[in-house]
Length: 236
Image (cartoon, rainbow, N blue to C red; front, side, top):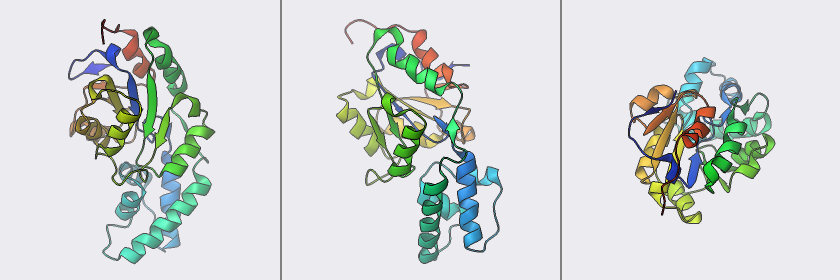
């Protein structure tokens, strides 16, 4: 179901910026396995999958820090992060897959109502595994840019990455839409002056209550259905 919390016309949208984990891909199991492998390596007890999934969204360093219980020993955090990243790079595609309907939705958006639109990925996951996953799952051709959590000096919800994408695509903020599964994504879009779309099928739908998006959807195909229902106004 599509639910508008703040009305806007999707017909004016020229740029869509997508979160990756929990929005385009279901990477939950590979992240859970990688965190628990790191904990085993440090001889610490494993964590339940749902707990680990709730830690995702603010980048690998914060995921590892949360899994360790926010220790004060930065050497341990660095050791854990290095192990996690090495393990995850090797296992990032063991179970990760597209959410059903994502590929079809992206293809439909690209041609909806004859309006040329650009799409990009802005994740807090490191950029190299982000790009590798996008390419391996056959999404590379949909996106003009794929940026990760180490592509800029700051991570979401800081708007630096979103603003770079607006600049690179020559798009006004009010002609752009940020799409993600958490309050981090909504706040990123708000901070950049963009419209926001929250997806409830991802990792952190409960956080959308903290920062309600302009529109919320429950299924991937509803992203493209936004554009089926609206026609772009003249002279935009």
